[in-house]
Length: 166
Image 1 (cartoon, rainbow, N blue to C red):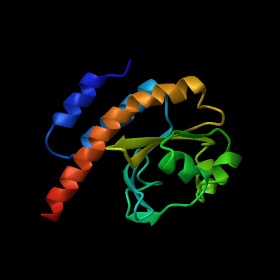
Image 2: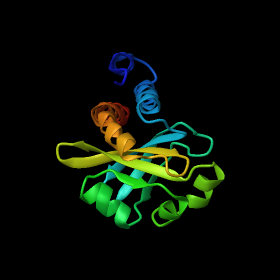
Image 3: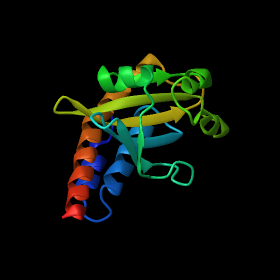
């Protein structure tokens, strides 16, 4: 069972938000399924763009501006069908992500992308990477427990982003 108390406490803290909430979400992911690289991306399906808003390896995968989606079976599964995407080999990752050489250079060869869904729309994805073959059916099922906390993080991100524009 994930540590929701620490997550709720982090979500309610002021200052350095949504960073504290995203870090608590990462801690939950490490506890629930195990991760070597953890990122969170926004998804704008109308514009076909995403933006990295959190990274456990900011030196390699920095929080950055928006970028267009690759239209692959990944986007069909994750964005259109709102299902979790799993690739357990670097070959499978290479079919959908152009940065597969960087992923492999980090010793990572599997990925799980969990859609974050609010009001019927995919507003982002939780992205966990690990060694080859790591994401078993049990881990994929356990990752579902991250969806509600991730939605709270994304809504906090949008709230703060909106405040910065005002």
